[in-house]
Length: 233
Ligand SMILES: [Zn+2]
Image 1 (cartoon, rainbow, N blue to C red):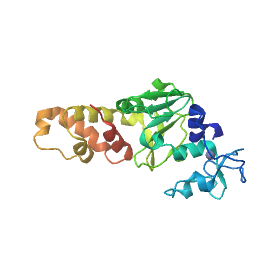
Image 2 (image 1 turned 120 degrees about the horizontal axis):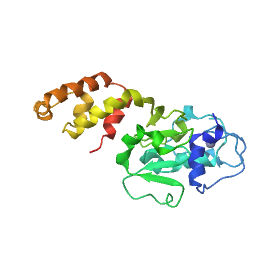
Image 3 (image 1 turned 90 degrees about the horizontal axis):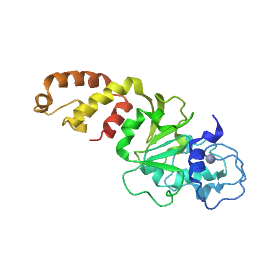
């Protein structure tokens, strides 16, 4: 992997945050990303008391964490908002922009765009390498995410889960889910495939059978649940 494209480094490069408590590291390889660094935050100041993901670290026996990984372990927006990083950092947010992110090289997009964007990454002009992170567990996941190279077939880091998102395979599924969601079915119904008795005829039986045929075959993988979660009217 191109070390500059480690997700935390890419975020750091775009935001250029001020990271406190850095010093000359004893072990010159970052505990988190394993990349050689010349300044780092000592391990006792770098992790919160809740951190328990030691097995995901590249150099767990190290002494310091590089500024980029420290920032990614610390900042609240990284565990609250979905983001895509390539040549630019796109953050999906419906509320006001958090302090410290204004005026940086970040693009903000309304959260309701996320589902469509996942199917149209080439429209976002991300460059050759990119990362897709969608938090759902209030945990910091940037350091675990995967670098991608193909805009129609890539890995999403969704909370603790990491899975392939094949947009060609999922396109029809997404369209059927969107039609049904707009047509009055709830996310819980779509997730389970159990529908309130009056809804199919109201939706139109032919349409209902055609769309559920597509959806029923696709139910199961985490990519399916993610699409349902992101449906938006
Ligand atoms: Zn690092």
